[in-house]
Length: 445
Length: 101
Image 1 (cartoon, rainbow over the protein chains, first blue to last red):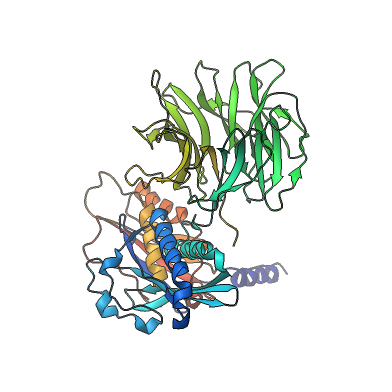
Image 2 (spheres, rainbow over the protein chains, first blue to last red):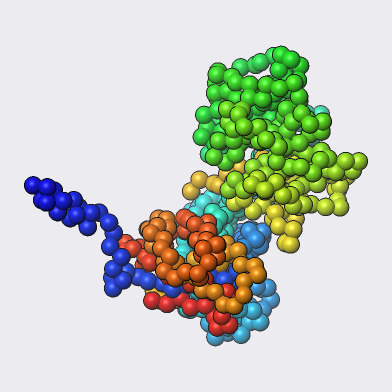
């Protein structure tokens, strides 16, 4: 009986465990080595039907420009200059003269090309990636939208290229959005824009001060502080339909609300009954409020770790504002940056490895953006020598940062690759004064 | 399948994540194998050839783990367990990297 049972178990195991049979399995041998660059060629998109050429011309131009800038800013690729491309437009796969392409003065890994057509009110792009080594098509996508959505169509194709050609290292940030606080006249409203500064739209229109926006991890909600009733209040809104979600007034000074990664709780700073500021969490309806820091020092600027198990915040318990971490229940408080000076505005990277913040040494006038490695506390400077650079926010790829800078004389939002060796810096706002950027998560597919 | 674009981008991703060994004398070679599910998830990682130094082997394992999950394999590579053999060689050989069936 026992032997039968054993035999049955062994049979079950043989069925359950995937067998690594080399004869039936595709086997690929790779030799990873650091530092290899991937060169992309970005051929101009062509009208599918010649009789639509004139009507499509401005859209084709916009598509080409947006795709180029998206791919360049992704930081993953080197883009081969268009002036070296063979002149033959690519409408069909057979239009690619691989021999001619092989004579350009750089070794192209992949080529993107495609067509666009108008069909009624729809704009349809048929895009392809060609493998220039194997001389085959790698993948394709048909993307459609309204005729005023050409930028979005280009962003989606850029994101698809990034996702597939980085083997999933990033989902692409081209379709992401940034919320920020914008002063245009007296009020400061919450605005939302495309990551590259296009399509800036007011989210609040209450004529008051609206500050410190942050996104829920699924991009469906915005939390921020509003003075619309005369006192600072935590405001929660659905980003999908603009509905104001109920949250109680605490009749105290509140600041920097942020929804937890699981969407269940809110962390914020609030003046405690002792008169200092403490870090609190609550449920999204304001109940179950807990004081995490419960100290006599000033504690502000909380931010969740990507797992939601920890919170980083600023505390002056050692005399100057410094970055501390605690568990999500307030336990295990420890300081991570030891350099002194003034540190503020911690922002945890999506992979949990880094905390970005703005910092200035004692006696310095301006802040700069730094990142600290959470495990070691070692810091790395990201911006330098140009105005005061503050309030960093990570893009969902964990490679780019948005921040505010007054380097032009007035605060504006900048975005950059968080790599001091390759700082592709772009100013993405110019109207009014713009502060407190919050970079939304990956766009939902 | 052979020298597929997918193999090359996986190679590039793991290569970028591999932190070069410092102060290593002579040539080292570490070989891991792993399987890739249809959704890009890496599983069944196995050390096939050790460098003889556990710490060095770990640098390669970290690079593979940091690349998990990969982008989903293209349709022509799905529906079967896709096995990668991943040779970490340092200093890199002069000939170009190979990805073959």
